[in-house]
Length: 368
Image (cartoon, rainbow, N blue to C red):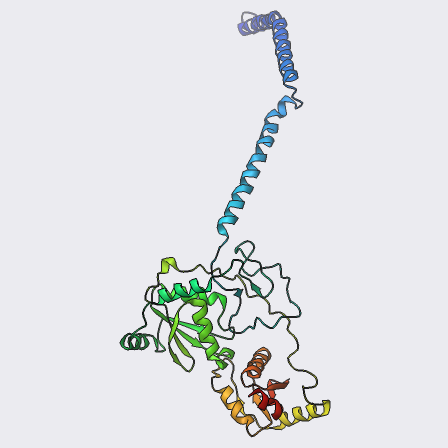
């Protein structure tokens, strides 16, 4: 059998030699392992390392993460600083410049004042709920000199006629629409973007701001630095100036959203000044039953409304304006504008109808 199966002898002999070699080498392996462990523990005791060797690499990675977080925070802080716009515009930032009166202070806010519509950290001014006041002192003489230099010499009649003929038509591509918000803050950025490629921009005005076009023109010239060279009913042409350079234009930070309008004092009192409760009630009924002086449309052109109301007050004591489909908010804005421009006293806003009272004759004579 041994001769028939010679591989058994060879394998057994091989196993015997293998185990004999292991038995001879075993003491040396034990000594070397003990010496290595002793050396490792001696080094760890010298370095006072409290971490277990298998987790030493993980502990090192945790230690190196702290400076990375600090670097990320520093980079983020640098980005925030570079993202902040340090604008040098010499006026307070508002959502609308032509439709708000800085002299009238609100009695409340519909949103927290800490939320700026410009975004967190995007401007170097603090939002007060109405405006972002200018922090640095403004040298008005220097600002006026810079604007005069940008405008340069006045345009000749030929140059003005050429620009008017180029931009006054309805198919003009350089046109902006001015709506119920009036001269808004973001509109200034749009004007400068138009001025990059054209000398002038055509502005079409609609809605409540058209009641006082002089106010619109003055704010456009004051806030943008340009000049209105053409005005026809509700169409304006705003010229940028001879020495205007788009590369050196002022930086205008953009509002990211429209802030909610604050709460102002009540416009219509229960009892009008100078009248009793019964007289006020009689005036309101008289106005509701009177024929409407005008019918105003939504986002229409109200250029002639002030003159017509003034003419009507020469013969009538109460005037009614039909503002169907105009909207409640626009009705109140129209009433505020007419109160200051005519002047008159709004005594009722009902069912999109505006009832205006001319006031007492003694007050009108003293005011005139």
